[in-house]
Length: 142
Image 1 (cartoon, rainbow, N blue to C red):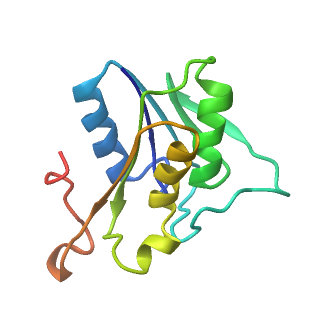
Image 2: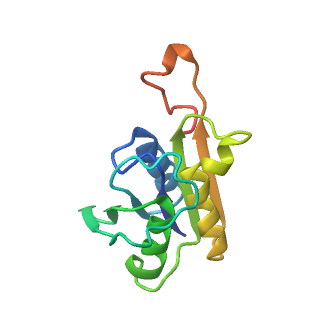
């Protein structure tokens, strides 16, 4: 099984690493393609006038100067060598995506874009309380 992992919190987010570990428990063919910087709240936007910049961080791990939607498109159409993923995992988002937050969530948008491209997709978000706001744990997700 080939899995694409993305998020909206950025390539260095702890939740992205947790999501990649979840994916690696299911498959040895895991690709991580995430925004270069935090893109929280960008919803399902595309970079139309700004050029997309791609940087390889390590083997099968890339940072894109763009939105989560851009990341999914870049991965599926350009990076994954003509073999689309079997699953897109988007997250784990730092904070919950509920109610109207879903409309603004780049994490949810990453999963929606995967679905639009015909790929089963799941968005993962981690709720946390005031005591753990500064340093949330992603153990529950794993």
